[in-house]
Image (cartoon, rainbow, N blue to C red; front, side, top):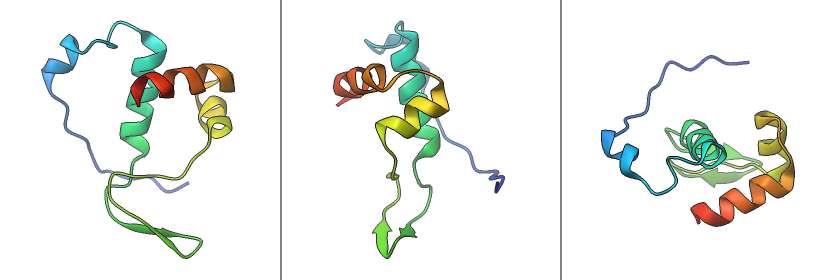
Length: 79
């Protein structure tokens, strides 16, 4: 596993975000922030731009140790 020493910037106003008090929603949001590409990458010949990443409900659920239906529900909220 490659260790990456990049960082993300966050504003204190996130404390006022409507989903901040929902732990699972905040966890998925944070996961997505941390997984997003910090520079353009290629995946199977497709260019994945900065700020995007390839994943699935199954992968996120496994990484966060929860079920796919929870991830689907949370992402629907975030969208």
